[in-house]
Amino acid sequence: MIGRGSELRRLGQLASAREPAVAIIAGEPGIGKTRLVQELLERLSPDTVVLVGQAEPGSLSRPYEVLLDAIDARPEVDAEQLAALGDPRRSPVERLHTGLAIVSDLVGDAPAVLVFEDLHWADSESAALFERIADQRGPRLLIGTYRPDEVTRRQPVAGLLARMERRHAVTHVRLDRLSPSQTAAMLAAATGAPASPGPRPRCTTAPAVTRSSWRSCCAAFPGSTRRRWSTSRCRGASPTCCAARSTTSTRSATASSRRPPCSASGSRSTCWRAWPGRPRTS
Image (cartoon, rainbow, N blue to C red; front, side):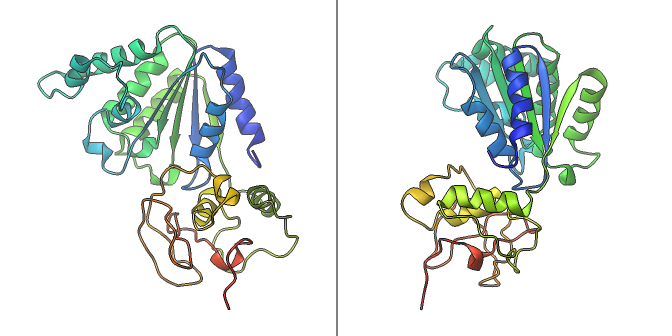
């Protein structure tokens, strides 16, 4: 994994230790937080239980959104517990205990990695569940990801992070942008083409093009080049593409007729003209 080797090793050591541990991964949109977690999960031993839940924009008003996402379509989850989790007639403490019971039933005594993605969007109940899981003993690595620039004092994650610092030995992983040489190596690995020693594209707004931006471009190409990437969903407001000077909003990396969609925050753009494998037009 280009440019993230040390971070991946740190997380791998925490997971292999099979002791209670908490890791917080921070970084701007598209910097590679989810990709880093995916790489870690692929390297876990087969006996490790994995639960991955993700908050979405609007999750602040939906209790236990992260847990519900993690257990979605799992037949082993008790229907009565699931109903109790969202029952407004139950007290917050009762619902919290129900959430903990669901996690405990799924994990048991096995080694586990539990991931709460996009904590900056998480509701207060999901934040409380994260904190209580961190308090528990057992061979569990608890991971949270978030965007520091999108956290305000009013959001539940702000208080959660402060309390975690006071009560736990948290491993912090801060992801910075890739260097130009790392970006070139990443693109070479993805396309099979040699890394270009030339200058960086003039139309990029960030020092380095991130994985998720280039991953969107891959959707426009058939064959092995595209299959090298395993992207889930694209989210966020699309930036201005340098070739078209227009914006779109997309939730999936679908190809347009001649130019792939952008997938990123407004703070960076994808340079379509610089894509080494793009189709040539007359």
